[in-house]
Length: 214
Image (cartoon, rainbow, N blue to C red; front, side, top):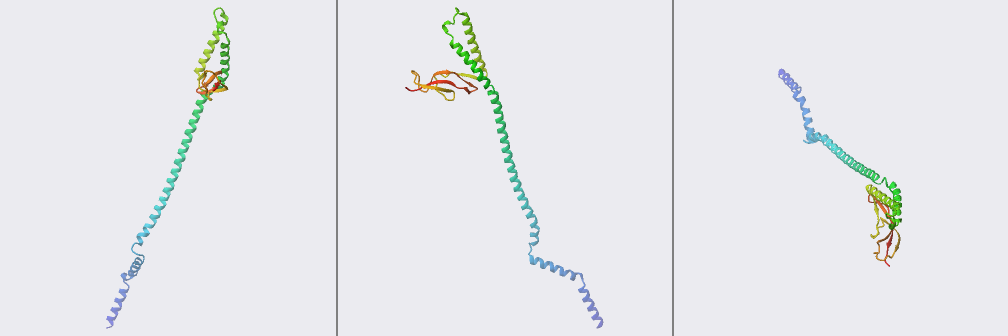
């Protein structure tokens, strides 16, 4: 009887000290935790960090795209401004080449006016072989006037003699308005001084008298 009791006590100690019973509380604790939090808690925890990172990357991408768009617009505007500046500079250089001589041309116009007045003042009936000195002088003046007009034309300077033409305030300067028989109102009746244009730009307007209705 005593030996049977000793064996029973030993068996109970061996059962209580077995590793299976020691691990059982841990398994029970894990099972309880899973039941409390639910089966998807571990997956949600794993997904939380990658989702936040993707959101941050998306925001950074949007910011970078906006910065890229802004820089592209600034580049395009700067490129357009540079092209406009280049075009203006080129036009200024071309204008300087074309109209840089206008001051010199204005001075020469006075010489051309004197030559014209000189040839007009010579009586045509006296320009004969019986008066060779006057004839040679007159011919020389005419040749000089013709040559200076050729030089003017070569450099883009064109003479304006608008008699009989419609009055143009951009090319003509009206000294007076008067009724003139046989002239249509608004047309140039008298040219007091011829004008000139340099490469299509009026260098000196013609001084004229304009016909008006009686």
